[in-house]
Length: 356
Ligand code: SAM
Ligand code: SF4
Image 1 (tube, rainbow, N blue to C red):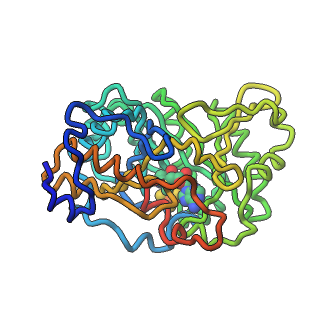
Image 2: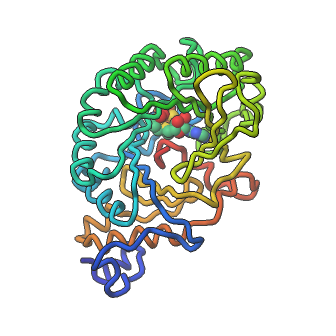
Image 3: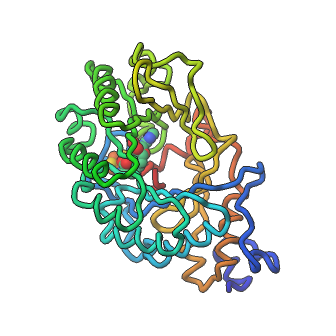
């Protein structure tokens, strides 16, 4: 248990007496939003360097190994979050599959919280080899990031990636019966890019996969790209044209995510839009992030962080951890201010460091 002096050193107010000692209260913030979804980053490294995410030489700020949460610490953090109401955990990064022994981490978390749904966001370059052991370890689904099927444009967008490996990874995950979705950041970076989006959607539907379009956010490298590269959900809809049913058919995803879905006009399939820029969904946000070093990040746009790692390494109890989580979420702002030209804090730190 932390004493008041330790709490002060960790910039935490003293834990109110009795807080979380008879059970972790539901995680909520001042706006009354409750938290059901945890995105847990397991590394800030990556084997690719997508133009909108990673600087050409990778992040200079790579965490030293001892700075990362150990597997035991990560499982403990998830256990306390689950006691506070988290129902789904998504492993992310950086690229989660480059973390050594990531399968063991998934298995450990699964053993700790078998009732929690486990998923991963990945670039899939290593999924061909790892889909089977990950599935056996308890991973239920993967969201694979893929912005074009064209080998040359993929190589240039990712600074060197091989799209063949990504496709092989997707096939391996499907063969294991995993739930697979595609995450696409639509960009007009090339005269052919509109055609790429149509090809990607048709390919995904052919495999029974739902593609989801994520509007580029001005985070880190994403803030440096030419403004005319960005595509809004409305522009993507226009490019996909008569492949999609009418706007009226749009349905929200339900209580667990920000995506809105539009069905295919003829046949099975749908696409999703995650439109943080053109259709802010902060009012219903139910997600919290933990970075690879164990900082709770209540919002992508907010640099404030509370270190769960330091709470644990100072000998904090599970009740202290729950208090640190509550404190981090309590300060969460109502929205992200991405469109406010005077708010530029978020431009300094990219998705790979926060955990996308
Ligand atoms: N490496 C994994 C991957 O690419 O799926 C997981 C981490 S990555 C940071 C998570 C997601 O963030 C990816 O789908 C990526 O496309 C998205 N992303 C990265 N930078 C972004 C930005 N500036 N705006 C919107 N999405 C971004
Ligand atoms: Fe790596 Fe994912 Fe970022 Fe691309 S989006 S550089 S794959 S972490």
